[in-house]
Image (cartoon, rainbow, N blue to C red; front, side, top):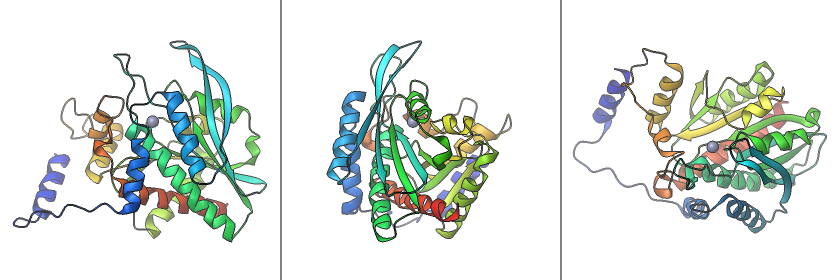
Length: 305
Ligand SMILES: [Zn+2]
């Protein structure tokens, strides 16, 4: 019912006589799309190499943090997170996003574009923005960007990384998962009491920047679960179009009477973890917009803490 009325409203709002002008891609948005395209169709070792080379091209010196991973299904499997550090300080703001793509049921790999090359490229953009700010106004925080491996095998890279850290250094973690298009941000509130100040910063940021943000009491799991389970303050952020975000909210939080058709799967969930997770859906300017928002959120967290 609700979904039908949303569609009805959007029909009413659409111009009846003039065709909608196709949005033009900015050069910066085009660069984002090209960077995301570099991950499509590559295996996870190749994807890691793309992360490293894109970071180097932006003037960073990425370090590999290798670990013994894998799960009972895959058997032992070597992995490596990619890490960069910006600035200095006694405490860290950590930004995470997994670069690995998911193996599909037929044995092939997902192209891993929305999930999660979009977030990886956004994080590299964020790193550049944060570096500019830190160079102008150094301290008192250090920013650590962790491009995690083997998220799709069970959040393994994030767990291995955290195991090797002094957790008391970590002020807050911002995780990005599922970002390729759309102007609506989604985040989970199921991140533990200790994350309340991160959620408050997010809400303030959404209001100040007039962003459409949808808070999920229950949000699908990503690397954030590793941090919330360890008592580390964290938020996990994804993006998509407004209708899709609200459909997804209903699917996860609406209960039996959520108004969605029997068997309805939100479009973003039809795309990720399938052969449909391709560059076809990517909107570079949307990814850029999200990246700028999250760069500001990271800087806000350093101010508010
Ligand atoms: Zn993902």
